[in-house]
Amino acid sequence: MNTMQKLTRPAVLGTLLAVSVAGNLFLGGVLAGRVGARAMHPPAFEREVDARLGFVSWPRRLELRKRLLPPEAEMRRQHREMHALRMALAEELAREQPRRGQLEQALTALREHGLALQQQLHQRFVDTALELPAAERRAMMDALLQSPRGPDARGRFDGRHHRRHSADGDAQTTPPAAGPS
Image (cartoon, rainbow, N blue to C red; front, side, top):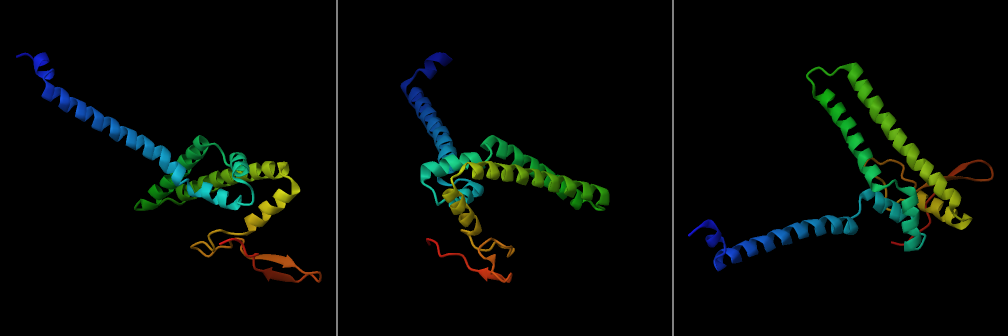
């Protein structure tokens, strides 16, 4: 019996069919998981933007998110660049004798890249804010002063309490307006 005759036997064909179906189901599951996971659990930055834009309807929120956030491919590229800069810093710190010049250079590159990203986000924010009607701009500013998460792990200022100056010039700390829980 030659190889072709062995492969055309019903038992062998059934086994090959079962293996093929299992492989296709596995690959389909992986693809669906990748696509569905992003829809179910968007990145933290997108969740933060959505929380801050809660003052507008969902279709309007999607439109504003597109204006505020860079395209996903650009965000991934930026994250890869930041990761590479952090790794260069980590490598230098891991040396037996880190070199001062290399550390300063790595930190400078990391800081400059971070500032460039922040500048891009601020420019997108300004462009978007200028296109909004006054009521939406005020609502956006109120939302920015509120933090959906509370203080961060380092206790940094999160905008929940902001200073308002009274008529006599004294600064008064005011708690945020109660929002939906």
